[in-house]
Image 1: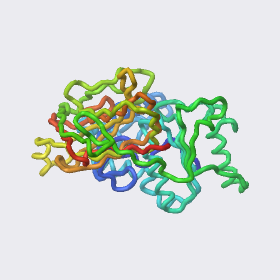
Image 2 (image 1 turned 90 degrees about the horizontal axis):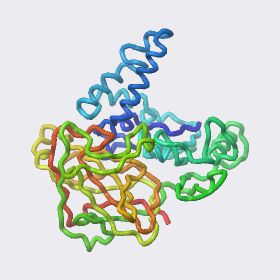
Image 3 (image 1 turned 180 degrees about the horizontal axis):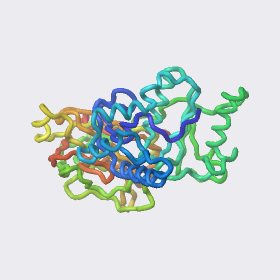
Image 4 (image 1 turned 90 degrees about the vertical axis):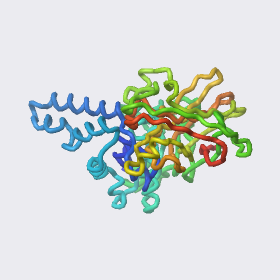
Length: 401
């Protein structure tokens, strides 16, 4: 089989929490609900239900074109900012994470880099589980996804051709496992690099590897308002921001669903985010994989409340590429919502994976914000402080040569 741009755990897809993972992308506590993807699905469901109502009136009730639990779950998510345990259970029943131990069929996964619905971490979760079970599996990270198109010469579902690299890989997979042909199924892992120029097949833009993950961790320590690669040069400092009331958005990131078709200047409202920016790069920096952030935040109001109601503090973590002119852009528009398990205690954030080249002269920026355009955050406004001065506050990027 060849699953493409799909989910591992729908509870993560629709209400991700990028900490407290139990296995794969599944977490012990659901995170922050995706606003625009939920609205988009609701609109499609209603439209489809109405257009087909004469043929099948049951499409309209109780939840147009969706399973009965979906509409109440959407209402709950809109009010509380997350999904309730019953909805999580229903979503996981419909996810490969719940039955992957039964999968034995050889699987070629391709997951989209331009995908804020089912990000690369979902593909990694499925790939890792299948490898652990010794199921034949390989993985491609294609350029496109639910948030953007595939690159020329990758795969065209309307006009597939063996001259397209991903189509070629799919054909070889089926030839080998269905026809029994003695053809190569290609390397274990491949990823599209959007900075490589080519014509025709996208094969030249793909780097491949016989191992996964790729890249070595390069650590950037939070230091004042900067990032430094030298733990001995970390300076004492602190930044404070406030999470918004009612989980309102405080950024102007690109809007999910419509993505790059509605470009917005990226910014955070004053006082709603903390940032740490690295020095201008003297040479290129190629990142392939999931960044990791080890962080401790101080939030006295959240700490006082967590004894009876833990996990109500929500922050949003993202990586920006800052060009030589100072213009910042969130890499692939990927944001990591985090429901902080315990304010005052260290936690680890596994950000959505990406493939990105930071060009010479550009800078890496880490942003921890109180809100996000595309998510419903925590409901209670809370001051949050991030202090620096130790090597414990650190961002790790998976860097390839």
